[in-house]
Length: 483
Image 1 (cartoon, rainbow, N blue to C red):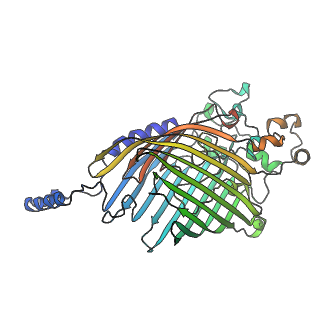
Image 2 (cartoon, rainbow, N blue to C red; image 1 turned 60 degrees about the vertical axis):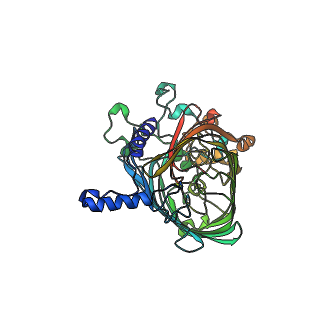
Image 3 (spheres, rainbow, N blue to C red; image 1 turned 120 degrees about the horizontal axis):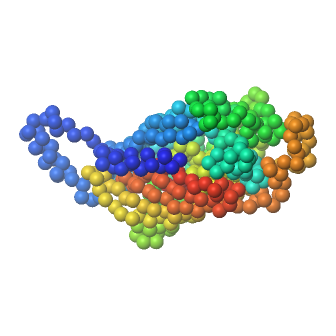
């Protein structure tokens, strides 16, 4: 991950000097025409600090990971501000990202957002394909599943010390997502929301042979059963959910929004509550379910638009039916802006804590951060600022999986008779008090923003507890503030 950060910073510096809103065609014009255009530009020179017309930000995506291979690709965000009367709010936004690695990890995404295509309504459309050869899987109920860093940390431990595989807490997950969401105004700052979509998951054990392809013998991952395989073998993962499935969904809810702007608001409140019904068919019909989400965000100005305090509190609960494990890692949203929203743990929810560490039927989370702008400047017509945001994050289980020790032991005896039951404590902690203990982390972020909307975010975070991976520093490179 450190290499990805390094590449990102290098290419950011290169791109800040190259970003342009429009191309110059002066090379093929006469001197008189050039003069006329220059005069027009002088007369139209922006003196109000607003942005008009089209603008874009683009970054290449290049990195290397020992398990995922060489990553290559690019991302771009295109904005249209019209005559500038709505700035910093855009009329239309198009986001495009395509990146892939030689070991089959990628992001392929098209996203559109507008409050003006349909008058008085906000429309967002997202189409994404997200293959992940090494997706995190740490078991159920947060701290009720024991995390053993020695089993996966090849940099600190040897096989003699207990190292098993870098892939031990991983599984293979491919996700296809399509969504179309609309928001309309009710009265004042109140809005209604509705949307449809489909989530298609393909899940399986890690493809060790694919990851080992082309590696030296000393660098190859051992072909062993990973934790995902254990959960399947022990019956903790249902036969009809272990390989994923397709789930069309509909959702609807209410929103209150008094923010002064969408990206990095200086003041205001955003709150929503909504229901999501996930359908399932055939052998998976038992996984029809209903989830409820509630989210509250408050933005408090401290000094003009230079310093503010922001916090968010949210919950996701299963109110009806049974939800498969892969849907329990997904955090529902009324309209999608980030590539992926996942439950507590990782760069989209509780930064620093292991991704998907808090896997349960229902969870809660909170984020608190100070947002400071260090400086503002212009490059050509584009307005930039550099900011920092120290933060504190938290997540916790609210609706746990039922893990009965007697039933688990019985299942292991039937399906994995060679397993030494004296070692079960290395996998599961049956003390129910541990389930509801919060997962905490803290860190600081760097933000480089163009025209208040295209925001490159680099966050560094560390969890408080070794059970959340405190032995490892976590960096996240994303677009936009987390909330």
